[in-house]
Length: 253
Image (cartoon, rainbow, N blue to C red; front, side, top):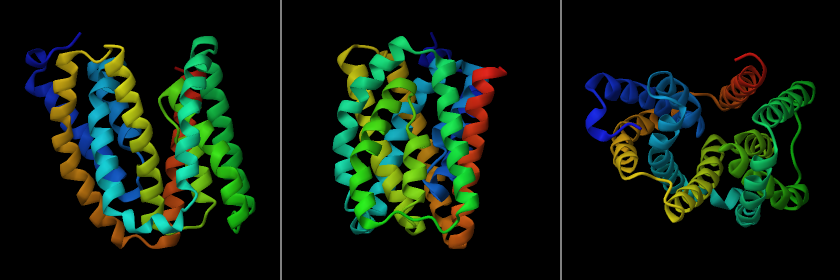
């Protein structure tokens, strides 16, 4: 296990560069901090250490973005239903994790994303009605919680749902960040309760907040220069990359 004093300056440089790349993506789209940073860090530090180091940067950056874009909450009034439904979903996800193979979960997630992207390509005008949004919020929230508990990510379900709302870029970011913050806090709480967050990695994760919080605001500033139509395309590009990575990890790595 890595401890703080054993992390060389080279290791911290890799962590900083990974968080810079992920932070810029996060600030622009509301997505991508763990998805970008963890693979980079994992190549040098190992997957487990990379995931543990990312816990507090993910929580803090999502909390900051949700706060900065909080005035857009009126555009997603059903978000509270989604968040509450995510709580029992996390419990189910833990059970699913214990009985399902990683390959099965990654394949299902990648296929789900690709089917959604094909549907968006064939029907770019697709939008959820207000009634549908409210009806779908609880099952989407439950599925997000289940995915978080089973795989550590919930974007494959959350992003298509928010994308189909047809909201603005700031609302996109608020919705993503609020859900990720809520589930991330639950994740850290469970780790603390079960004593699964070693003191050394807690310190490393807290230090890693610094480079993440330098670059997320920069990405947020760059978002103003992106046309709304291009923002939607960027979100779907991130989704496509996520699907490819999941499928590759399940069958080709």
